[in-house]
Length: 281
Image (cartoon, rainbow, N blue to C red; front, side):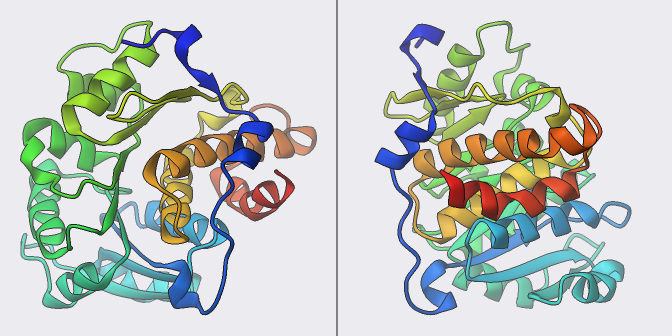
């Protein structure tokens, strides 16, 4: 397992050498991102992830949320197509059609029932093609811990917090988060971004050191997952998207700190810094 000393530190210089694909052409060329999540009481998680994906450069945005939230969310995010999810466990055909055509699917933000999440993952990822990029966050990671076979797409990024990493590992991740990220990357054959430590199944390992305490705020993880999805949409490979997203997420918080203090900013304010942070690398 790689130690901290074996990880490459994510710096602006490293990212400039690993430049993101240059946006060209129409919105379709920058990818269609579908965010699936948003239980009845938490539709805002999908809003945060979806708008973050657009700020990171995605061309088109589609959101699937609890049916009662679909119309209000479509007004809050007029840039997106918004469809409703049923509460009976069946995934609507319209959502499956969107999954089939999406370039990127981010699944999990705002879900709050593990059985419902598992059914959604089976249906949505089953409808998606093998080349579709996938970002799994929040309850989707809990479902994956119970059934690793849910994830079939090789272009995947997992974005667990420490508790979710524990579920995936079957034990506490411990102090060596680099080793925990690497173990998860090998186990699930996916890129893992864990608390600033990024690992890919091929042995690559990176560490982002700019994050501060203010990132530990409600909705912050949804923003990070959305940034990853947006970067995948514009053509980044999974490890590149995870490293860039970790840096952009952390530096967006640092940009806000002079005005709000280290812990006073909100996740929605992180979203507004994403595009400018990318542009200044």
